[in-house]
Amino acid sequence: MTGLIEGIEKFDSPGRGRGLRVTRPFKVGELLFSSPAYSYVLSFKEKGSYCDFCFNRKEGLARCGKCKKGFYCNAKCQKGDWSMHKLECSAMNAFGENWCPSETTRLVARILAKKQKMVKERCVSEKMLLIEELQSHLGDEDNEKRERTEADIAGLHRFYPKHLEVPDHKDLLTLFSQVACNGFTMEDDELSHIGTAVYPDVALINHSCLPTVIVTYNGTSAEVRAVQDMKPGDEVLISYIDLLYPTDDRNNRLRECYCFTCDCLECKTKSKDKAKLKVRKQRDPIEPHVVNNMIRYARNTVREFRAFKHVKNILKC
Ligand SMILES: [Zn+2]
Ligand SMILES: [Zn+2]
Ligand SMILES: [Zn+2]
Image 1 (spheres, rainbow, N blue to C red):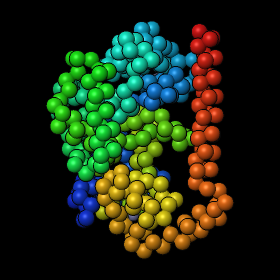
Image 2 (spheres, helix red, strand yellow; image 1 turned 135 degrees about the vertical axis):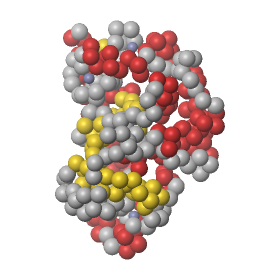
Image 3 (tube, protein in one colour; image 1 turned 120 degrees about the horizontal axis):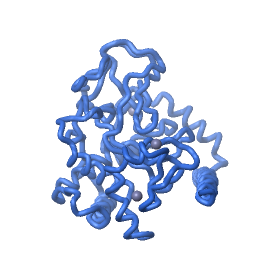
């Protein structure tokens, strides 16, 4: 039913602003709710590995005959994606190799197109929160972030069709800020980034370093599952960041990306910091840049393998 998710309600969380809490018990592993994306976009580097529409990963996806850069399971997925793909299809053809909007710009274009198309007041991803109501941190950004946003906005004007209703500069800055604070990185089973999406209802969930839920992805939908037993009144809390780091590192990251400092029990007591530092100490001979290089190497290998598979598929066609 519009306006409601069974077993969940919106409330004013003390010290955290609006949030979600449960109104009935949930067991570890139980699904609290699932939310379709309001808008989503497949990463450019993953094109050909996943269906642009349903994010199904398979070999031998069919290509858009016009641009050869849209990949689909079948005609149904292609038809389903057309209202979004048409924003990029002709431009990808016209610009060729020079077509390079950022993933954020691509997502914002899709949000604008969806808003333009929406006749109903709210969609299935906005049972608790409208896209316009997403929090933004406009004005809190540093110069580097502001410059990136200006470049993203320039990309929107350059690469997207004239009939896309683009709001004025100030409203665009707000929308980009909302997407930066509330966008979800979609990951596959190997935790590799495959796309970006907005889920207004899921964005209502506040952060804690002692989360009660996690978000996983099923196609393009987000699934919110309990990671501990919850009783009525318990707040729905996810971690916005990697919890392997000690308190100071976690809070630096939260301030940098989300403009707040966490005051959960773990941040107050720092009870796991010693263990976390110890884990890092044990790994001391391996410097962070070595780990990063290893990750980069592993990712590149997987990517090359996929690209190779992709080339094979094209040759087969
Ligand atoms: Zn599909
Ligand atoms: Zn196309
Ligand atoms: Zn915390």
